[in-house]
Length: 270
Image 1 (cartoon, rainbow, N blue to C red):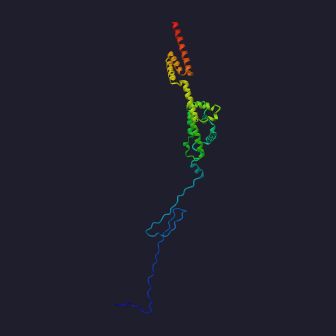
Image 2 (cartoon, rainbow, N blue to C red; image 1 turned 60 degrees about the vertical axis):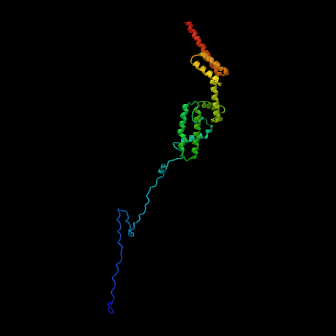
Image 3 (tube, one colour; image 1 turned 30 degrees about the horizontal axis):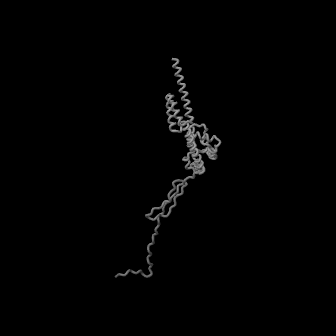
């Protein structure tokens, strides 16, 4: 076995070679794209195999001017198409609704025709129908519109009927106007009773009386005056107090006499 050679006494041992330090390559800065733009500072390198995260940047939204914001938000407090004058009119009408008759509710004269009443109802419906205001925020405005439209509908229901309108005009022009402004169930019953009475006065209450009267009318239309007179007298046996039967009998008898006189004069001339 061979032994390593020993350095001679007094000799200086050799030095190890110096270590070379590991230096990371410098990352050059990125030149600015234009004047006034600062270069990106170099940062530490990300470990190998990782993806650097990209910072999120919130979009810059310019503020909306107050005037534009007001215009962009539709107003729902006054309802569609109601101007200041209409709102004032609505408030005035609702404040005295219990004092208005149906003609005043529809803003009509008491001589209005059925066509006028129909047009007025459609006019009010186009303006104040509650379905047009279902998105309105004001509860008070909604209640006013509902109250007015209910009365408008009620007015149209009564005034479009000839018999009801006739009785209603009598009621609201009489001394009990304040109690007759609304058409109630009692008013309905009174109207039906009045219509029945009028029909009875025109035709009769007894079935046999009505039968003979109607036959007399047909005879008179055909110019058969003798038959008409005979049937009217039969009708009066069932209803002797019927003024309409008596009046019609007098008319038939006069017509029969005039016709006989005309025929007699024609016969003498010949």
